[in-house]
Length: 402
Ligand SMILES: Nc1nc2c(ncn2[C@@H]2O[C@H](COP(=O)(O)OP(=O)(O)O)[C@@H](O)[C@H]2O)c(=O)[nH]1
Ligand SMILES: *[C@@H]1O[C@H](CO)[C@@H](O)[C@H](O)[C@H]1NC(C)=O
Ligand SMILES: [Mg+2]
Image (cartoon, rainbow, N blue to C red; front, side, top):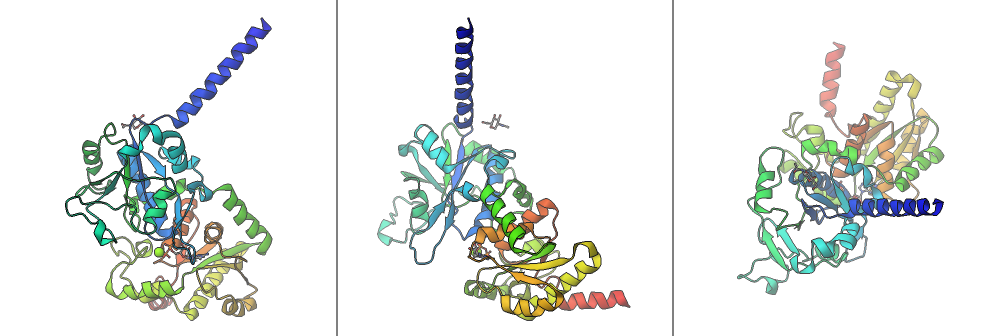
């Protein structure tokens, strides 16, 4: 009797295990959506990710989480880093169904997306870099042409047998009924997987999608890394995190300031419709003097407004020049120490900046924008270099004093 009871219990447990495994990796009848994060580095990819997540939700398809695409010096092919190296998968599920590309490819692709049915989606024909590949009879997305396009899909041995041009459909699900049109043109029964050549999203991220950042939680490794650095390397008390984007590629990018109303992430400070003014060069590339002035001003402001939580140190993240010498010289007299990571790590920099008590970022940089959105989701304050414009601020102040 006892024996039978045990046996039944055992069978029962096995059934639960099997059904929960099925529940997790069962096929979604509403289909899947995936894409190559083929444009830009992390900041751009993160903007695109939020838009793609919103798009997958609007189409009610499971989003296949692509790996992050990284470029290393001296390497001809991009490296693909699993999505969950940096971010947890679970919190995203709260907003919408997602699955990592590895899980999808190992557990579902044979059934849902057999090799003979892998179609790549692009808006219109994309010309190949190799001219002989361009067949006027058969226009193609050339989804694997060039870097990172080839290396990305190669990561999971994905080849495409055909191309599909989805134009004039687009991705702006917040301002039109476009989602229904996608569903009508590409129903999940005939199109179980939509695989896009690039992200089905805009850059910079749409205003409506910024708040999706709340579902991006750093993985344990980066949460621990940030916490340990802050506890072990920084003095006790509040710290100011700053992002100095000043490498040579940035100097070149900033040259475009003069031709435009917006550049990259600039809507984050100027507003999507320039509600808070036009673009100007100091937003993109503040001078060293202006940087020092703004840091001092921020520290003094905090002293006055939050005397119980004074800034004790500055943490510097940079792609190139951390200005440790200049900043130490300027700030030691104020009793402030200046720090950076011992080794370059763009992700740990981000995770630490997200945790700082105050943050000054670069309004044009999508890398800064990631930090700003994360901080917004926690209600932490953020500021930008050169914003508002120094002259205007002085005038406003003079006005107040009058
Ligand atoms: N370690 C580190 N790397 C950075 C920092 N700022 C920029 N980078 C690197 O430069 C890249 C900049 O490209 P992206 O993320 O697209 O941002 P954006 O070009 O500033 O809009 C980042 O992904 C990093 O690899 C930084 O503060 N620290
Ligand atoms: C969306 O897809 C899920 C999973 O396939 C399904 O359960 C749900 O009913 C769908 N929602 C709508 C509005 O169609
Ligand atoms: Mg970039």
